[in-house]
Image (cartoon, rainbow over all chains, first blue to last red; front, side, top):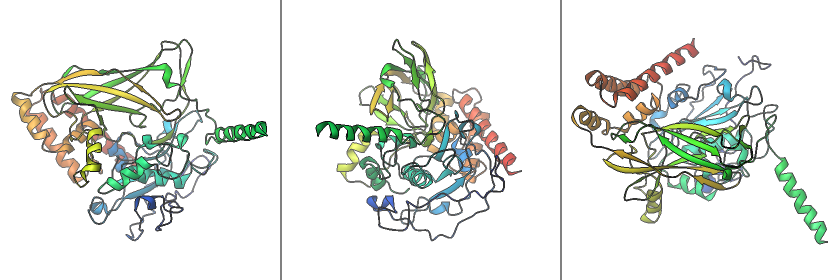
Amino acid sequence: MAQNGDDGENVTAPDTGLIQDSDSPAVNVFAAAYVRPAYDIGDNNDLVTFRLNMSTSSTANITANYDFDTSGSQADTGFWTVYLLGAYQGLTTEDHDPLTNSSLYGIVDNLNGLGATVFNEVIRPPETANTGVVNNAATTAHEIGHLFNGQHTDGNGLMAQSPNRMAIIFDPASLHAIRSVTHP
Amino acid sequence: MRRHSAKHIFSLIIALFATSPVIGVQQPIQETQRLSLRVVADKEVYLPGELISVRFIMKNESAEPLSLNPDLSVLDGNLKVFVASDDDSFREYIGPGWGTRDSLAGAPIELLPSESFETNATILWNQKLETSHLSELYKKPMDQQRLKTDYAFTAAGKYHLKAVIYNAKTGTTVESPPVAIVIESPQGAELLIWKQLKQDPDYAFFIQTGGLLEHPKGAKTAKVANELDRMLTKHPDSRYAQSIRRSLTKRQESIELTERDNQ
């Protein structure tokens, strides 16, 4: 159950609108790096424990929230899996309440790690005015980019932190990282 | 006609700056060029596999107050660390969870002239890039940029650390002067511990973070924690002991936090 006017609201899965099962760069930003996601594992779980403020203070605290049944194939050489979690918000110091607090939009456990978390509450109006480059779908694609070794300093494209992002395509440095990694 | 075009360009520039995604917090343009950056390590001499704590001190060197985003940290990825041995060039070190936070900074930090802002980090486990599957053309530049070992420092010798602030807004960087540290050869009980630690980079990850990339009660984490506990019991006064003890406490705190959340 969410608080502050959101009581009873369902925390949804992250928006995968930019990482669709497609070769079109318009709906799959990874197409330029020759990566095409598939959603065929059947491991969706909409009943994970609700946490009002998810701790991201350590990698262990982040992964403690995962319900990653197929982690065994995460680093498989022929069949990769990544974990994607829709969460409510981060710790009280990063939930944009009050507005002078920072806003944590998304995080992964590690570069080239296991999974990504997207914080739905802080990345939607009125907390954040969504734009074409800062929104839930862009955050989801950005976080998955980290699992492929993409970094914030790759440029002003999709891997830039939200305040510095100018486009929702990967910069050449990100594409190079994604194409070079053995598994996400 | 020319004036008309210029007005259009100006309007476009204004429009681009006006599309801030922020409500409530005015993001200052980072004026990092007026900053100096200094790295301070907690000691001068370490053993291989020993946790190194560093402070990054950013000082306003100008005569004017400076408004700074508080996202200049290793976790945000705007602050990077580079390491070089005495006879080699600097390579980037990336620690656990570094560069993974996609956030919008909160209220800016106001620095008066000569005032400083500090963040810190620890150095031990290194995010090594796998490059053996790449052709030499791609492999070589990547190997030259990034530290290639699982532990940041594996051999005795003199090393240099430096930090760099990346300002994504302006595309500029601020670099610290290098600071020297010495890694000395372990002896006796400490040699025994290092021999065991270097077998598995998970020890480094655990000592640095108090966990691994799994639930704090996961099988691999439990095994590493038990082994470290055994080392601690056997050698409670070694130079590794304090950081191992802290990591085991951190793991316990993670377990308690998870259990509390699940109640």
